[in-house]
Structure formats: C-alpha cells, structure tokens
Image 1 (cartoon, one colour):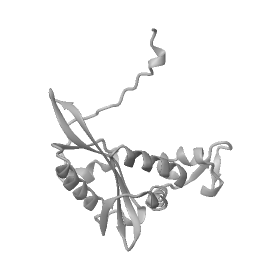
Image 2 (tube, helix red, strand yellow):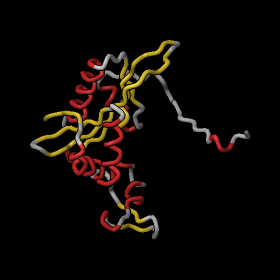
Image 3 (tube, one colour):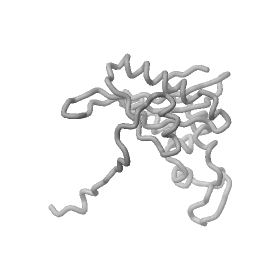
Image 4 (cartoon, helix red, strand yellow):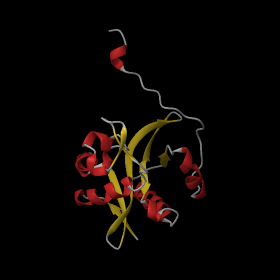
Length: 173
C-alpha cells in the first residue's frame, strides 16, 4: 500500500471511496430512493459533502492544494482505497500558540475497512506533521471512530465537545 499527497486526477477514486459507505441514495426533490446517476450535484453533496461527486471533489481538492494543505490518498495496485485531509495551522492551546496538524477527514473504502488502511494513513500523517514542525495532531472523530484512534494511542483530551456557530447576521449592528 502506498500513501501520498493527492493530485487532481485522484478525484474519481476519492469519490468512489466516500460513496462506498452510502447505503441508500435519496433524491431530495422527490424524497424517495434513487440511483446515484439520478441525483443532481446538490443531492449528491447532501449525502456527504464535496467528496460525493467528481465535480465538487475537484473544486474542493484544488482549494486544499492551493491553500498549501494536505489531501492524502492510500492506494493499492493503483486503486485509491482511502482518503484523508490534514489541515496545518497555528492555534492557541493552553495559552501558547502551537503548530498543529488536524485530521479533518479520514475515510476508507468499505471493502478495505479493518485491514490497516486507516492505521497506515495515520502513520503517514504523523510523519507529515513532524516534517511540518507540528507539535500536536488533533482530530474530532465521529463516535464510531473513537475506538480506532484509541487503538493508535491517540488520547481523548476533550470530552463531549460541541461546535457552536453564531450567524453574524442575527446580531444587531
């Protein structure tokens, strides 16, 4: 298995990885089950974000690369079987500015789950973070992925964290 920084020509494989986990496709306009081909780009996006169609994946991947961030793919025999995104930034942590690598996305094709792909990708991310001078790797995992990260030795520091968003248009001027 080879892990590397993604290129634009990887979009089709990245989409295949993310779509592999979708059990049913729903056509929003009709509220009923449909095939992937019957969905428009927005309906595909609603099933999981920019990775759900080649068009939106290409735009998203281009933006990451232009911003100097790190979309990553795992491939085996030329087939993309995993995808991750690592965002490097400087953040205030306990009163100090620290350089961090944040694992924003980690997805493995459903046919390759439980076979060490995710672990290999995280090892690649660890090496990348060290090369980029990061002090920490952070992740906000889905509940179903917490055990995976714990097995890799990633400690849960913040429990029951939530993301709060304030729409600035709702505040009086």
